[in-house]
Image (cartoon, rainbow, N blue to C red):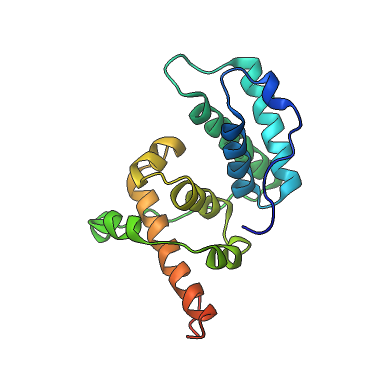
Amino acid sequence: MGPDHSPRLGNVHLMMPGLARSELDQLFRHCLALTGHREDAQDLLQAGLERYLANGPPAAMHPVGYLRRILRHLHTDQLRRLGVVTFEALPDEDRLRGVEADLEQTVVDAATLDEAWSELSSLERETLLLWAVEGLSASEIALQLGEPRGTILSRLHRLRIRMTAWRSRRDGGGGDV
């Protein structure tokens, strides 16, 4: 993901009841995955934390999961306002059966991630972050993002193909992304 993507949040963690510094760092990485730019990620995180403090989490939800949902909705709202919403085709469920085990065995190295990061959409960066960096399974990602598991599996499958192409191109094998 490039050099130093840790948030510069000052003493915000002192004002965030129930959230550890590591969780705030995790949320910043999530914002960075959504926006692709450090300054936009900081703005998104601040807006999300303000909304979290104003509303508080529902009793049945984990604060980090709730904040991720807030951040994703705020980002989607911003994209809608700018008219930049992207749409993805529905997955072919039969084609995806048994793919999850292969996906979870794939290792994404830092060099491939650095090369790919700027070329991915915000949905792809978000999914890749939750899967490769945070270590969530496709089912956990689907729960976090409120999307069908098949959609997440399809997105991970396409990412795996692209990562393999980037890795082979970087290692001198040519190949198109």
